[in-house]
Length: 464
Length: 54
Image (cartoon, rainbow over the protein chains, first blue to last red):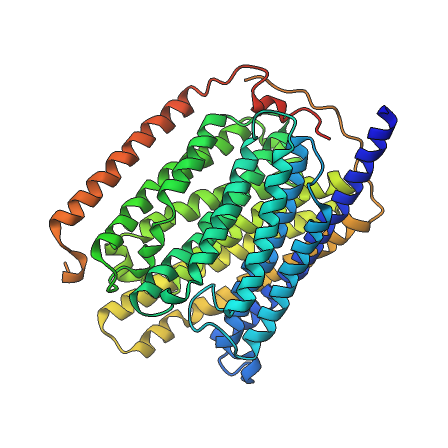
């Protein structure tokens, strides 16, 4: 009986590993594609005559870059990792491996159709991050629905009474996203001010209620496991979960300061943007205090440097978002390239670095195969330096751009003023893209390489 | 100050006060949890997750 259950457990683990590997492999392919498109878009600013064919026009390629980054790369990677973390923390197998594959197929079909449709000029207008037409978005929604069912049923089969904190975040994120995606496509909110309100609700919450909780859930599992040390304060993680839920949903309206949206809604969005400092600072402090005194271990790890940068990205990006919400600063930064720098500080420095940390932490454990140490180091430093150049260039350039607009000078003066920063952005972006190629090679090694992971030492819980 | 940077004063104040009250309350809770996290029971979920999982 015992040997039978061990054999069954091994078989379940092999199936889960294959599924996780597939999610990571497809996600990585989409990362390379979406950021290749991003590089083309970036160089168009520095060289406007570059690739003028309609299929390579800015208006078509830009949403391909953003939607594929969101709904293909980050969504697939985070859902795959969430399945894995749920199984491990609940000491059970995935509720349905078959449905796990169906979810992955739906994500991919939506992304392929979305990419083709956008390049053909078939889109949902200029609704940022929801440019996919409704029936393609519906495929994505079904993918999230199947993932939610599988995840919740897996957690329901846990052996402990408690639901571990990671699963609070991943289940919360996936349920909130179902609501978010449904609201965004309700037909009677597709025009007028209702459209503006829903657009603010969707574009901001796609980051804060989907990618953020899934990445934070990943941190709450990966950090303790890698450091062999419990999270500093579990209760603080729970507080951050609930305050994120209370404060976040309404703050998307801060993208539409000075718009005809009701003034109280704009003000509430600003106030709760400030309130978001609570979960952000509490969560970041919790992670940093968990790492305290273990910096040598962080430095020597494959995964921990990525998680560390991810935590810093969460802290800096979200704090910056709070300040950006103020009317006095919006007066300068509204509609400038500063916002593009901010979105990369969050989606790249926080979410993407966090996913990389999760993959480098968990995929070798699952497959028993290690990435290249040299490639991992190069991946880390190319991505970090490239991202720093990118964000600094757009933060400086965007501020200059806003100040030139406020001065009343002709628009072309702002274009001339920011032109050198656009070139720096392209250079930083090129370094980031080069790092993605190295990461893709590392994923290949972790899935099928010959270098084995050393045997693990039995962890011993450290009681604070 | 440009006119767009101001608004209806009473509504703004009410919204800001209500939001600020909630925010202050959770700040106090967060600081308490940071200063004294407690959670020393070895059977707490934060320790159990460190054990070798399946």
